[in-house]
Length: 296
View (cartoon, rainbow, N blue to C red):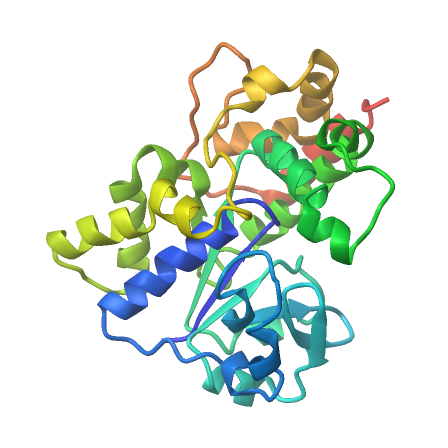
């Protein structure tokens, strides 16, 4: 089984990677890593990266001009033959937005899993990450305070999320993309896991599901990856975002937030819609564009 996982950065991609790896291991499916077979790996596994084992993750970048594999954010090489690349691994991680080459890459994978997270929580998480010691070491910037970074970059973070998510939603049927929710794993892990297992065509005994849930619990992963994981919750934007951020989020992402069933008011309970209706995504795009024209 060849699995491609995707999502906007800081939407639970690390968590999803751990979950899929656990599923593969517990289903006795190979978790061979392409990157481990490259000469650079013997050096990279000694690098001080953001979390243990990061060097062995198969990260793929897809652009209009080139596909490339990388180790974290500090090593990159072109993929000259996608078929040979995929043949050497069963699980690949990408953050790439949809581009001209996406469909060509997708056809090499049996399954594509896309994770979505409320963009307001994601924006707060991203601000903390981009101001972390790890990111500042490799991508130095003047702003080191997460709150000030969020203030300066909130609009950009929201726009990035909107079009990344919209593009994958509109192609979800054509490419049989499974939509997973960060909030689903957070609020009802077993239900979200069962949906993923069904999509992957894999069954696990109840005892294995219980053991898997414990292995990927925030408590367990936080202990092993203290620098990478911070809170891991849902809905903290309701308390941490100011009124102006709240207003801008509604303008930039309102139509997509409604489609996904995310709460529109601070006083609402955290929610999302697993059963996404078939939609005219071009019409949704026009709704988003019309809403965004009022951002100023």
